[in-house]
Image (tube, rainbow, N blue to C red):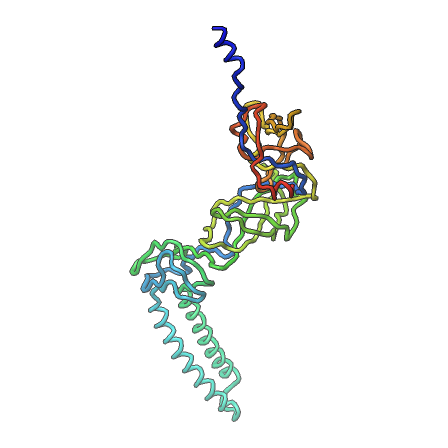
Length: 339
């Protein structure tokens, strides 16, 4: 037993476990205050197409979801009665024109009175006005696209009788630009300016936009101010009323302490990071330190309290650490020398 105890006593201790991690120095960066909001996509050109006259549909030239060009014919209503009336009005105009020409010649010899000549002129102008009225009525029975657009759902068919004012479809402009309306708090509304850049998140893409309009007054209930930004439509453009995320930077540039976002861990007590401190043997050890975060800057986090310039934080592998554990930096030498 004495020999066994002596053998156990002289046995060397197992080597200490050293975790491989990425250690990065705390840095200072410039940033501006930012806020995020939920925006609504608005089409610069959007309208509901309604019939201006009643009548039976004789031709439908657009399908649901079809893209149309400016001036394309969308729908035709029966205008046979108006066309017949126009022929009668044209005949009256022809008669009035010949009568006026004849009476004008006779008036030079004094064979007709000025009253008869004026009556003939009136008949001609009345016939011309009637033709113009009928042309306007016939034009209202043919609906055309006012701009390049994509049609919505069509819920009518050929042969159907439509009263005046019935909705045919919607037209959404297919231009490259679209608007995003969003609200900002009253506390930062004074920082919003025309042409101010904002960032819009659309279908996973970050799109640069700029403010083009600010509402004249705040909402009486929320005290928020509505802002409109304009941006270029991405591939697979969003539809009107789609929801998007908007990020707005405001105010002057500020300096702040930043660390990589993965370095920040969460616990019921709050946020914390592991700082690499070198002991008396020259070994780096992980030491937890509570921090107070402010906001994210891409893949960085602004730290208000807890670390300072000169500290080294563990940015990768922190999840597997415990206080006092030895760590080794696995960054390439080129990155370490550039820190």
